[in-house]
Image 1 (cartoon, rainbow, N blue to C red):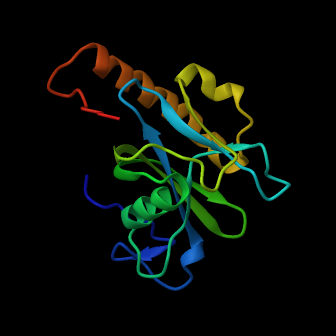
Image 2: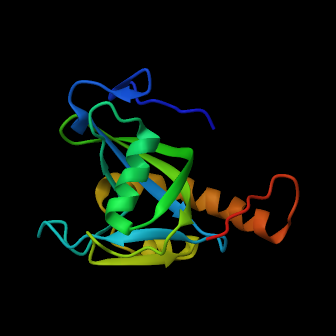
Length: 163
């Protein structure tokens, strides 16, 4: 998919000005149709709540490059970003942009989170999500239903998810 830029955060696909305006996160989906979620350990006000792993873009960084960097730092894996799942305004004039992705190398390890967990669509609502991530749950459930269907019925549109 071609790069899609956040007009609030970028110009020509790269961050300009204050990089902290754009936060990117990954909904990493495995070949079983599960998504990787991360439980915060800090700060105390957010500890124990769940989110999609990611972080703020650096100056001059594209969203995809930032997502790859953040997943390497936070999870110890290399991901391949795919499609934009959603774009959510968050307090302080920030934007959260969540991309679907799959792991191309490594096993997820919680280097900056309390816990990582692979969950199914049916388990998403059982978690205590951070508010900015909540609006993305329904689009993610619809996507996971399609992904699971692709896995059950191989065909020209089925995705190869080797993780």
